[in-house]
Length: 401
Ligand SMILES: [Zn+2]
Ligand SMILES: [Zn+2]
Image 1 (cartoon, rainbow, N blue to C red):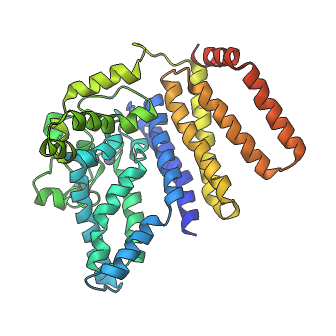
Image 2: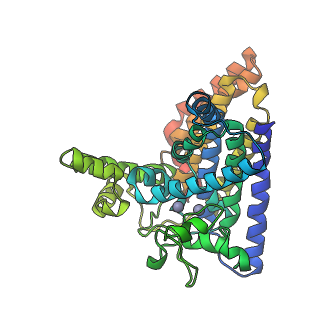
Image 3: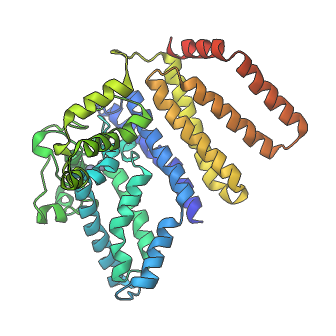
């Protein structure tokens, strides 16, 4: 039941994304860049896929901690629900604040802040590693005595609410601005204007920022994204660039004290030249990237197809064998990596696509385990293999123009 609820969240959130886009056009606001929105959605797809594979593990962790180490045993009633809501929001504030001020946590939270747009698609820019970091902070709740089933409900609430604060189409909300985190507050948080940096960490209540001195009111027009923009649609680069920067800083640091400072220090202390060095080594990008209409159409179609596949996989999960779930998950993860690489106009996307073809063939065979099906799949794969290089050239020319 719970899983089907998560599946339904996909079309529901897509509906709100389209609604916001229509509202932005009506208000004549330029809030969506095509490739940026696709890249945002792809990060969200990967998070949902990995979440699907790890479903239950956070519940198990909270339940285990509660059963073995809880100081008190708190029963569910109106007051304890209110207390838990306040506790989760308070813990969220510190988890989010740590996410910006401690390198090891920034390495997973940075993905959420890379987009230079600010709209509902940005709210989907979350990674599974961020959920792990969050679970680390939230573990204090079962230790205090809140049971896992109560925490799971609040996790859903905290999963849904921030989606609606990532928008430019909603202005200020009157007296609500004093109590809850509104789109205006969160616009400040996503902005790289110097006066807005490291502000408004709250998730649902803005009171924590006011209490701990990190509140800023939206006055000037925010500029969104990182202080040093990433300028890359590569899914892999977006996820791993800061981790690689930390690895190099760690290697360069002399002595344990300096190494620990790399992990637990502030992002500002990481030498910015390391990013430039890595970009030169790993990105090798063309100066100007013009996306052909064919490429943009192709990437959109495969993103929509992956969303449909994700919905179906979660919805029909109980009817699928573990191998099928694993193969479908891998297929979806390869697709989001592929979309990012296509927007970066990489030639190696053809290798990934061949791998996707192999996976699709395997999946087809598990549904139709007939000898003829096996022959056709092997014949098709062999044909591509025989003409591999010329097909790769044709494919990339057709995509990139
Ligand atoms: Zn943040
Ligand atoms: Zn955000």
